[in-house]
Image 1 (cartoon, rainbow, N blue to C red):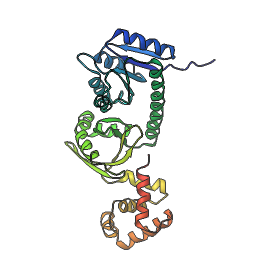
Image 2: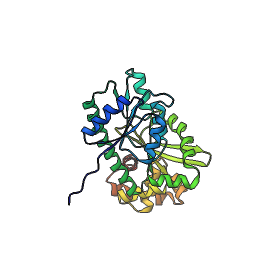
Image 3: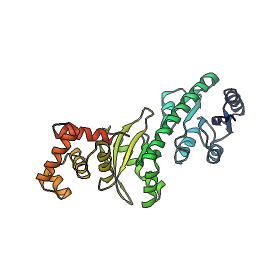
Image 4: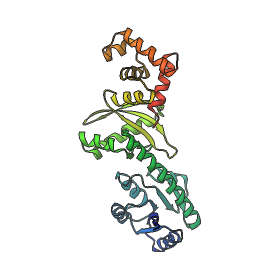
Length: 301
């Protein structure tokens, strides 16, 4: 028996019935299923019930416009990763930027050229599937990773991050409180590997910046206060002992032998012995090279 492949499900949002009909016909001809909505609120209600693979969103609609609709969709973790393509008659660069800042991945101008629209949809569906595969891999590896846009708004997170936030406070409130701090920090163009401390009502949280993806997602790893998670990462990937990985982690953070000894309750001589073993196992000759390898390991996902 041959299994039928599920058709891609596209949510089309436009206050013009004529536009909806034209796009619906083009998607049907391309072998895709379409859900139709005449306004932003209806679109959100439909998306919550039947999660689409991609959303085509008219930018200019009465009451709730496309930009605000997109922002509301992106605030929901279950919908945040769905690619949104804006359909608009606006061609000014400022309006295009407005749409991308709201969370859109692309835009097409009206009147719609259906062949171009279908081609763009296929590209973004493929990108979304690759991104989802990466998310699934991170989930299976138990990585505490999340992503934001340049404005600091959360795009997605692995279950480990969500579970941690739920344990210490209301997740949505914490994400909202973190947005401005992350935006301010990203505006200073930090280097991958840098650390950020978030000061929230429920406490202080440390993040390591992992870098940005080709889709302009800014990736962070949520760190334990004692650095245990990153220490274990170094231990597994670089084949070090528990103590060696702890020493290397502090080397990567610029600590001296004496400071490492105080932190780990070791003598400077013992720290130096661990250093000798670390250099030998990593095939390096100095602290700078060892720290560089540690950073490479810590910022790789």
